[in-house]
Each structure stands twice: as structure tokens, then as C-alpha cells.
Length: 296
Image (cartoon, rainbow, N blue to C red; front, top):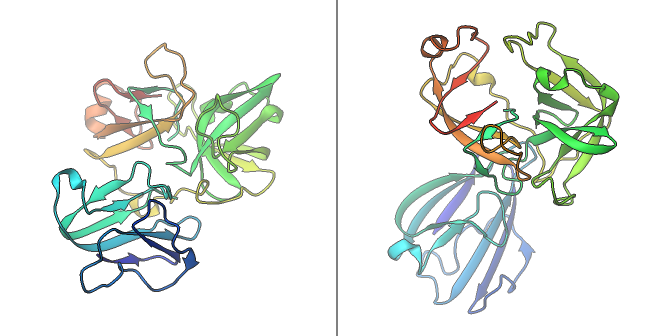
């Protein structure tokens, strides 16, 4: 196998061992070896290698790879395992074998209260995800948000209606709200200012957007990082595309809220089609529909 980590600046770690069950034969930072031992000749029996590429905060890593590995059913024999979320134990990693090329992009570095038909997101699968928290005797997560810089979080304006701004904060690195601190990255930040869009309409939810400024800079890591803002898609309506919605909303209408962050994939509907059912829809809103799935 040969590979290149493309379009990134990265720290490159190489681990290799033979005939053991742990990546413990070496643990050195390297900047060039991105192939298996003995390349371009055949690799020896029982060899296991691991590479870890780390990107700058706010970037994704892309691995372009050429494979020439014996094919096996389900890739249960010789194989390459790739973890998109950077899990060094390779839990949940995808398996590849055979001959050919592949290109894999790491999980990045939407905002809703109801996630009908959703499923659990992986821990820190979406490092840009944040939560809006209200403190009134005890802390409660009231809305989702998305990190857009080390001082700003984007959320929905309707989440702030009737709230005492002095009791609000944001939490980052959160996954399961029932377990306290999920990881060293889980941290709360007080707010220094809240700005809602001056044209927000609570009846139609037009301009339903607000910016939260944290009192202290958000600490970025592989678990917490900003979203890549879609400036180049500003004139694209995403009709017939699939999008992922995130949140801690209820799994079914009227049901209890889950503790674990949920994700759901839905289809984007064209504006004309949606306006036949939702007459108040504006050009600043996106309409989605997938049977059995929803978000609000």
C-alpha cells in the first residue's frame, strides 16, 4: 500500500510491529515514510502498521491511497483499516482490501430541537457541534449550535425567546448529556454577548439566526473545532441533495429527548415544491423531507 495525505499540513506518525497484538514496536514521529515495510516488495507475514495524520485545527485530512492487497470476503484477512474520526484504537474503522485506489476524507473540523428517526452520533464525530445551555438552579440543554470561530457560535434566534441572557452559556465537546464531562474536551463557556438577527420573524421563522460570543476563546482540538463555512455554496439551493441534521431533539414527536447527540439524513426539497405545502417558506430557508425523519 502507498498513500499520500493530500491538501493538508500535517504531523505524520508512523507505528509498526511484527507478530504482536499492539502498536508498540515503535513510537516515533516521522515526516516521510508513508508506505508499509519492504515496499515496493511484498510486506512480511504478520506485519501490522499504523499511521496517524493530524491536520491543523479547522481542516480535514484527505488520504489518497493505492491498494494492492489480497482480496478476502469482507476484508477479514489482509486489510487496511481507516478511522475517519481519528480513533487510534481503530474502533468503527472501515476495512479495505484488493486492488485499486481510494480517497478518504476525515470527519470535519443545523441546529434543531427535534430529531425524529435519528440515530446516535459517534463521540466527537461532529467537533463543530455545540449546545446552548440555560442555568436556572440546574443546567439544561435547550438548543444546538455550531462553532464558527474560537469566539463565536451560531444558533437559532427562536431559542433565545423569553430567556434571561445572563443564565445562558455554551458547551462544546458534548456527546452524552447524562454523563457529565464526556472527555477532557467537554467544556462550558460563558457568553459576553448575544446578537439576534434584527429581522427575525417568530411567526414564519424567517431570519431565524443568532450569534453567541463567548467570554473566553474556545479551545480547539481534534474533538472541538469550527465548521467550514459554505461560502462557495452561497448560490446553491441543494435541491435533491442529502443533508445531515444534528441535535439532542426527541426521537419521535412528543417523545422524550435523548441524552446522546442525534444525527439524521434527510432530502432537500425544491422551494416551489415545498411552498405548495408551506406557503410562508422564504428563499432564506431550506425545506427537507424524508418519510419517518424530521427535525425542528
